[in-house]
Image (cartoon, rainbow, N blue to C red; front, side, top):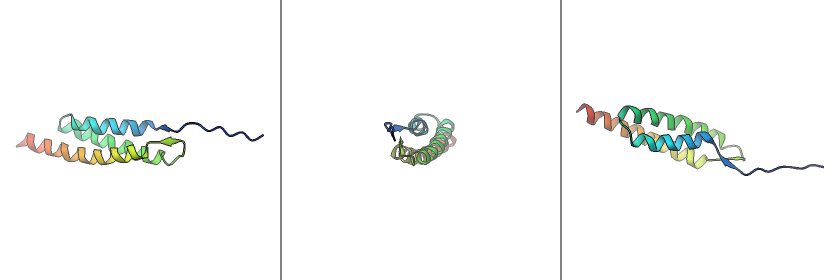
Length: 85
C-alpha cells in the first residue's frame, strides 16, 4: 500500500519575521529602522527560498517584505539626514 500524507501548507517563520521587521522599521528611529530593514531583507530572501517548497507558503509575503525593507532603508536614511540637519 502506498499512502501519501498531505499536510496543509503553512507560512514559513522567516516570512513572518520579515514582514514584522519591515513594518517595525517604519516606526522606529534611523538606526533601528535601518537594522530592522536589513533584517526584513535577509529574512525575506530566506522566506522566498523556502517558499519554493510546495508545503510552505509565504512567497508573496516575503517578496512584499523585501520591497518594504528597501523602502525602510530609504526611510531610515531620510530620518538620519533630517536628524543631522
